[in-house]
Picture: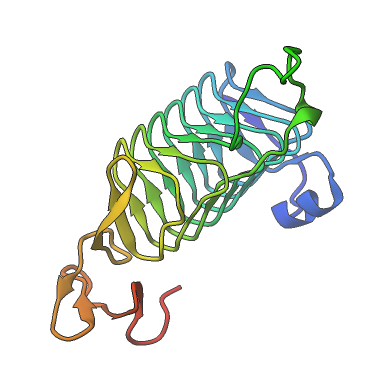
Length: 223
């Protein structure tokens, strides 16, 4: 195990001023973490993972074996990237997000290796569109998210799905292309109908109300 220790500056502050900072974090010897990246306290970067320049990873995250975090990607606290997940810039992952093994968050809506004149395309020849993963959502293994989509709070994407449009909060989507098949609660389990426009989580008892294709907590909004 390799441990990289630095100052105690908050990740948000480091991200704002571009300061290279790595808080107390566990970085395995075979991992490649750029000196200009920021790692929060308690984060672990496993073997063969790569965290590129100016990426910001929050506290208590797990970056799995062979995972890739692109330049300038923003990752919140307590996020899990499983083995070989590929997170291309400028993706944003909020707190508590789960990204399964071999997931790909793409960033090019019209990918080409060469331009119309046959010349190799460079970074300045295209505009990157990052994927946004909102608080608490989960992405199943080998799912592919098309550039620019947003997955809502506490939503779930099934394994192997191809997501080409935004996913609402609390939605479970599956298939190619992905479509909503159920509603889920914060615990991740499918919600059960309780009459009218109301749904209940079988594990926590939390209730939700459906309105015109969207779902929201029936009581105070969960954090």
